[in-house]
Image (cartoon, rainbow, N blue to C red; front, side, top):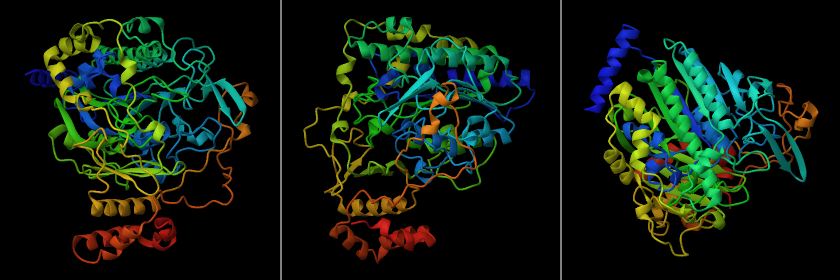
Length: 599
């Protein structure tokens, strides 16, 4: 009934304002940085409460199997290009502030597609897909305006970035308004970025379609000397959490939830909410352990940011709009899918080949998804790859055992009862706006029921020490739909499937543009530009290729059994699949053969 009321409200609004149906919705894309799976309460977190986000999740679509990348730069490049990062050479570890690398200028980005459809496009917050050259900057890649920081992190209060590399330290301001450094801004960046987004929404002509990408810095560790920074009131709101660092981290997430509430309220004030699509995702999982840990939790999923495990690449995600149903989408959705999906929703089409799949009809009408496989993450420098085909996920290569376990549960200890979840839901800004503006009935019981359905913690069983850790001799295979915690290895039970999937990954590996070992350029030092991080290379300067560059070896040694399997593929469906794989390789077959079968 509430959905019917919402649609009726939308119909009345459109007729009053436009007199006809609006085919181009406003799009608000909110991107969090290093938010863990168990750091939002709509997925079951009991220590961190996110009522505004939860209300949108309850009234919208939760993407229960949404995959991003293991690091920030490849995740953002996949979002903006619709292509796997390995095709662009930006896979693996994020681009550093002193590194000459970015999304190739030849690639067309999401805001460029939308501008062609008469959208005004804005980026607020984090960029981190290249800034060594002017042509890498946001306003040269399709955004009308940009306000934010260019690199991987920022001090939340001073807005500086300190980078240490090979014994050297560089430091400088890292906040920009388009191409000009901002030297007179004060405050916490979550609040600054939220205020800038609200200003854009309030001043926007609602008859013009808007694409606003709000890429928050939080809850990533800060770029200065202090890792976790948040206003005192957000820490106080989480006084029930026993672990002090987790409490501060929770305060950062509380700030993000308040930001979502303020954005929704601003859309309502300018009569834009009824014709808006809101997307909320994280770029990857939390870094629970290590020197730069942010004390986020991916529990009960395995691993942390920077690994091939679900805790790194399976992210909280939702999409909300009055024109979309309320449901849980259990089919897989990849970060590359946003570009063709949102362009389609905006009335356009992507004609050039990309890896993303248009999922709009799956979201809107429940049509079966066309996505069958995903290159989940590739790190040729560390030497591993993760790939999913249907329900099956294969991990190949050597993966650090120290980051392959289950982390974060102990951080969630409580020292007293948290505030009432039901009261927070009823009192939050999003609930008030949806109730007053769209007539949506906010029912804590239904929100709690959906939350229980999404909660994976009940699946967790203390694992023995023999959980699968891949090596160059043997990988890991899981049925993720049945085993999202990656606890039951199927490698030895399904040898034919292992060999087929390995062959498929070998082909994809041969198509990769290798990520080069990061190299610091001393010319990037901010002290050369009044202690401000800025582009330092001319657009036409030729990049220096590394000496003795060799193609990365495939992360699994070719076994005799795999070789026998390949030669046996001469009849039936397996033969057809092999022929198709070889045909897809085309003219590159001979030159990639050596990388395809590396002993």
